[in-house]
Image (cartoon, rainbow, N blue to C red; front, side, top):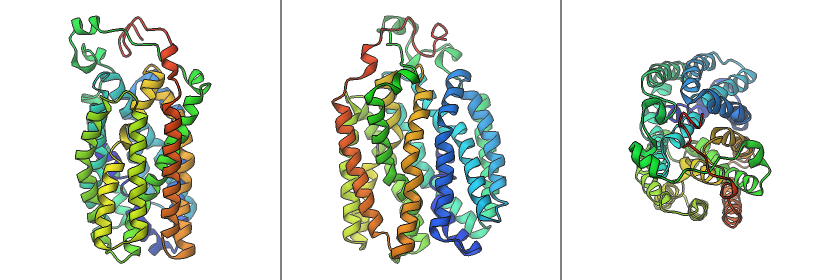
Length: 406
């Protein structure tokens, strides 16, 4: 997770200035490439999810890693704007197959009672992508060039993901003769059988699915836009590029602790929607702080609030969707939610870039982010009051991931 996110999501902002300088593209034009990538990755979500549910996460990781590595070599050949858009989109689809959806599916299959802490540990990998990988990506861009940085990313992806997929990953505990949460066979037999998961078609017919999907969309709207524009933002208020990258790395490193804490809380929270509402309020406070002042003390306060507010980001979908709709078709349902999320994710970086191009600052963009986090707070409040469709389903005869469950 650290490597996959570090060379993609976390590194987006590092490529803006080099592409602007070499090709003379505007910030909005460069940002549209990231939006095109998010759109392609989001639209492919249901297909990737279906692959994972039917063929297993392991095959998705192996195929996705191979093709993703090749797509980074393709990105390195970019010489026109249409190629930037097309190659970014191809790369995003293949990355989707490689790590996010299959990784979330693996965690959901291997853990039940401890899913919160397991998902939070996975989320620390996302944080480490910003803390450990981003400085190396920045160094590669500065010393070698942005094209060479893409080539290096492809090589490292292949050398890391393929061995993990071949020799470490197993689709479910049953494949290794184990039980979820490391339970013994006797403990597993004594545990209450799980409820049957809803299919995608059943989930789509529930109000809760759409409220949650829109809640995720508005929550990640501000998160993804900031992920792309945080380095350019810091540069726009007089902070050097190197210092900006250092701030991003330190914030990512510190968030390892907050994400573990969030995981411990998640396993104790009856409805994780309430936790997300609290996180949204913290992110609103963070954006308000930055909109008032960009003095060093204000930036430090913003970073602290941002670290806390984003603590539950990587685990939100897995914890909320599995509890609402079950594990059986989780990857497919997650893929459908990703489509809705993408509506916000493809718009937000371009909107932020266009606001900067038109006004010379990110002030208005910060107000937009405050509004979307507030909308997320309201939507998850509504979801908190809606019944879980899974509670109306009968129990299964076998645990998800077992041979009997198929």
